[in-house]
Image (cartoon, rainbow, N blue to C red; front, side, top):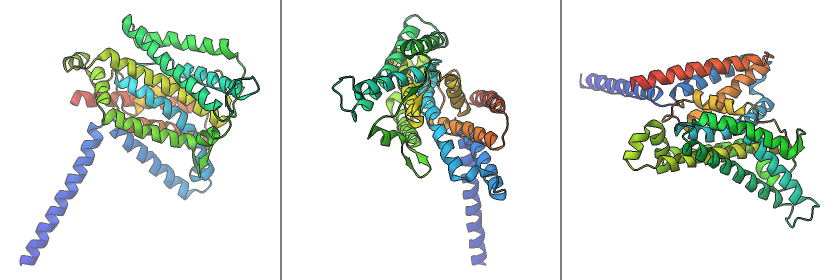
Length: 352
């Protein structure tokens, strides 16, 4: 009798623990910005993997296909990390696609100039790193410039950076013209940015390392709290001693820096840079952030959401390519997913 009662109590405790775990999972999905996209991403992966295992001609799990997809994810993901910080702080930057092209072309031309026979006293092994430093500096300073104009004259960042987008596109053509630029940096730069470990390209490793760094910055550092504060409620942020102007300038600078790094990373991978290569990437980066749970009016977002949002977009693109579907299907899917994500985020915020 005692044994039966003990077994009954043990079963009740186990059932309660299972309910508690499932309740925590449901609460996480409902309350975290990345909750919805995590469920959707896992569901898509499970379905696609099951189809691929059942039908070997569907080559989603082929090593070559995985390698190509991972390479494609990284540049947009790096840019989206910077865009997410700025969106959480309550601002936008539509010029990141143009900065992607301009900064990468500047870095490549300086690398060729300093590392060639131009007489510049820079060792060929150092020249790519020097060009990288200049390109990143230009990106960060451009972001700071956008912030100063936006905040000093109280202009919506959408308008400021729309003008900046056109300006940097024109600057790219003025600086280099419309021809593509071959970019094949020397070692060890090429190994650091263009090698592979199995199916994982170096660009993907950089993306993941930066995602981890941004996670700790955003979620475990005082500056990250400031980003959330100024994007969520500027007056409340000022009341607790946060300087919204300085915080937003830093966010703009980070966004420009990451746009530049994204362009240089992509140019190194394909060993060529197109003057218009960043066209449209600014909207894709914003889409990845919104799909990942970032709020359009600021104060909400997560790094995991950005990673999953970017990965989901390229997963769908890869599926469409494997199915030989027209390219515009991808735009239709992303557009619909953006609207659904915004509706979901607004519903969650109203419940909160």
